[in-house]
Length: 394
Image 1: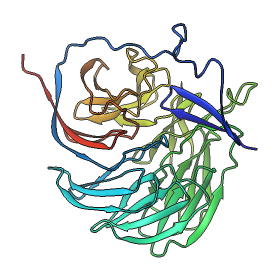
Image 2: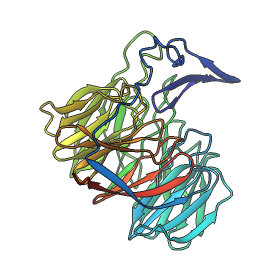
Image 3: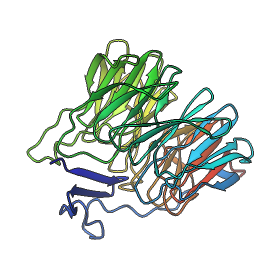
């Protein structure tokens, strides 16, 4: 029987077996004052950057009760967002004005993907959907083998979707017919989540809970290369968890990915050759900017690695065990959300904390988006908000 490790940011760790959830001593008891994983209390900072809210709207019940990370997506002056209870909205990026909204009457667990005039969503009961981005009309719905926890992606010929049972599916773009399926053979224990597949021309790149990143031919599903991000080590199944669940980042033909209890790596996507690696333990993923690769470690440390692999630019350890999400570059800053819904603004130059605001007291799990000096935050409660960042006057 395969058990599952469910993670709420980095604070909750449960093992699910048939019939319930059991607590692992030393991982779940976060109320113990002596627990080293106790989230640090926030200290006052000197705010040199302020966040002005430009607009706010609600999208259904947000992330719902399934610990999802349903991400909005932007394109052609619009932002598209979906909620766990099946509401999908298209909004003007500049004003937040509603263009259309639909109720799919299906529980959504993965989304939103965008290609051209098509949106892609995944349902918790094992469906992938393609919608018309202009109206929200469902163009097709295809059954897959399990829950879809990340945005499906398309390239006009193929739609790829990763399911929580460790499989990657290639579907026909026009009809939704299944073209191929790859089975990664999941470990006994995994963290709840999957990374978002990346389509690079006719190649699809996906990461798995066995610590591997794999490149496939998108049309046929044939494996082109495989790279190890982490190797399972230790006696217990918990010690051997090496999921690559967070968002990966691309720059040209260079891919950046991070694993839990493993490494952050740089991979040449033409060959699958690993260019460099550095120790890290992360479930939220990586981003890049200013010549850096940014990672939030599970212990709450934000690290800027030199993109060349020649070491670290800086580290910021003032946010210990606060369940940090993926760092999001915005203008010359780095935005990082925590489990209490605070967004911390760091300098990309030296990692100093220069601002803080709280868009959603229910927390922020979904990746944030940015465009210039505007940050878009989709909170767990369903609040989708746009904030303009600027320096404070002295």
